Length: 357
Image (cartoon, rainbow, N blue to C red):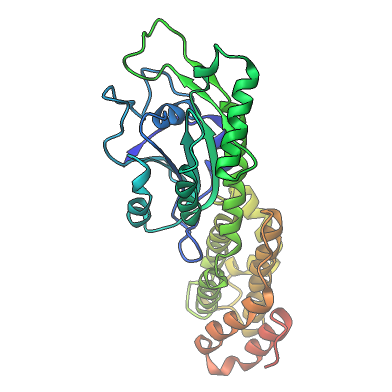
């Protein structure tokens, strides 16, 4: 797997800080864009054009021998986006096994006269991809004809594939046998970029909506248990603000997939005033008295749940159901707290989780 840097802005705007999840269980897998088509349709040239590459700096090499890609080329553009250039139309099943995860956006590249047999390839691509776009490449072949000839061809392709839209493109100039004195002839690339950007954004949001609530519980519950422990162990209460800050950073990264700024973290911690007492040795060796520990736990859990609700809304994602989240937190926390903390447990569950005790 190769890495490509300096992506064009259309990829960076929404995805350079986005760690995309696979399905509902993996929040580290990138989005995958698969490009397929018959040999010599210009798949590699199209990818180079989309990335804004020059002839000398083109990661997707166009082979001189019939323009055929001999092997599956996978390019990790950044931690969040992956491009796959397939050898040919028969390799989609192989790629599905290779990635072991869904293909998010599929691009079928065609050229020349309309071919109804390509519809079966489009159907296969749809089976594996969340979104599909069809590109009619090498439209420069029709420059010598009247404009209506190309329009007629596009209509024939739309009818043959039973689709409403095809993106006409030209990516002339990446073939190594082309005279480098000739300028690159790129057409239709910006329109295709805009469509791909929208598809990727929609696909990302679909994935995020289905990240399980258990992921949030896995952040919040251990934090509350650690805060409870820190308040009852000598010299550990000063660590409570740090525990909260780490949890807030993890939750923020879960929704926005970028780091939470230190200033933002400080402002959030100010919403939980009780933690300020964690640095004050009001009891021997920084031990918190039961009432103050109880208040600290309630405020901490309220802050974390409030962050979940606010950041779900801010990320334009489906708000996680607190009705699902709260019982899971109760089941995680209650067995871990000392039995003599019955009052603390009661207050925690009733005031924050709104659950019967």
